[in-house]
Length: 608
Ligand SMILES: [Zn+2]
Ligand SMILES: [Zn+2]
Image 1 (cartoon, rainbow, N blue to C red):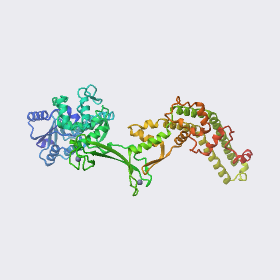
Image 2: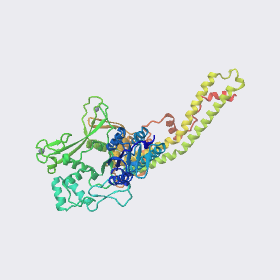
Image 3: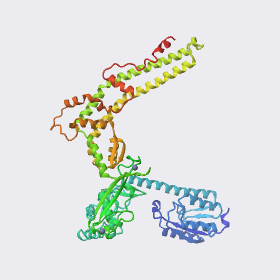
Image 4: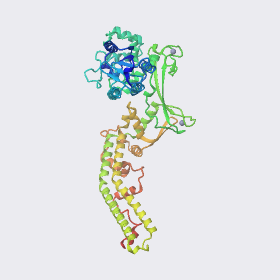
């Protein structure tokens, strides 16, 4: 198509997005337009319209650009004047639309100050290339920016401007900038939270901050330093960033910055702020024991729930916070925010989820549940003295079994070799010329015997692999459990939910809750430790060996009869072959496990 046949009518289009990283280097809309006007004058172009928008071209749906395309469709214009092809689009869809309009003959020319793209195969190829580059540019940069941000978030540094009391670290390179405390203001911020926690009304805090402390905000580019405003104070008190958490790109993150207030205090402050507080996200609160305990009545899962109650400072009425009411006393209509030091009560309950069938079980408070766990942990707690004795004993035991283990391996190896040669002989006999008519060994008989020998062989190989590892594993497990018994009670006194959870699950299995009583099947070794403790109280922690002499000799004497307990073997029955080994270990002779059944057939095989 010859474009010279048509009179060109231009639509001039300018664009710059303030939010796009790669548009930061691009000239402003005003200077783009100035440039386009200059081109128009110089070449005396017929420019029908001069339009602009400050939108990103990554995604489709720019209204001004869409109107430009509609005008091309309708033949109002048939050419585009723009600063650079990347002003027109940075996505494949819009690029395709422009090229297609050229193919259809509705767009005859795209002109920029430096070059012209006409409706020729070469120019369209170049134009496509330009569009491709601007798209790749945008893809690359968004990958880099996203990666940088993700990295930063993973490290716990919230992107963006640091709130009052913190500083953005400007010294480090972008993407690695931490959030530091503002040494001039951080202590004040901490005090603000403490005042609110003590129940001081927010307006009074504002007065203290600005009049008594003469607090001034950190000056920023466009905002000079000034006293804290009322809305800033509310925003500050409700900002979870101060208790170490922040919400970014759809989820909560644990910040790496220094906390100004502890999370549970922050939670209480939000209650006191009523409607003006930060809406607590139900997902942020986790419970330690959900999903691991079943109801003793209906076998349904036990779930958790939390509840906040307030005692009104005016009328002493106690009321629960609900979704509908989180800000006012229903009795005297006093706002929680205006109460003078209201009492806040927090409860966390566990109860049957009642999802399987109707169930009569009542809920139990977490403190009650944890008391019961503490009691169990207390019943197995052992002294460090006993712990080190037991661990040494287990190691000694393992060492003494070393020779046995080696003997056992040898005997199994021997049996393995014998079995192999029997299999060889069986085969030799089968294919021997003497057996050509099957008189010595029928097909049927060969098949059954071969199968039996092969099964035996596999069994022996398995035994060979297990014999060494299993004993060491058992010993290690016993050491771990003794260590657990010595330290779990102290470890349980933590706020770390994961640790509490791990401790409860180590204690035993089949955890149930019935009539507010926690029941479980204790781990066999822990159960044994409990028994030892009952028989010999000196084993337990808190009995100083120096106060009440409890010598190693006494211990040895006491437990020599009970060594299996130490190994954790007592109530954990072993496979039969393994149990037999324990007898061998006590000094009996080891007999080859591969005798008897095939012993008689030796006659057959040696005959060949
Ligand atoms: Zn139930
Ligand atoms: Zn009241």
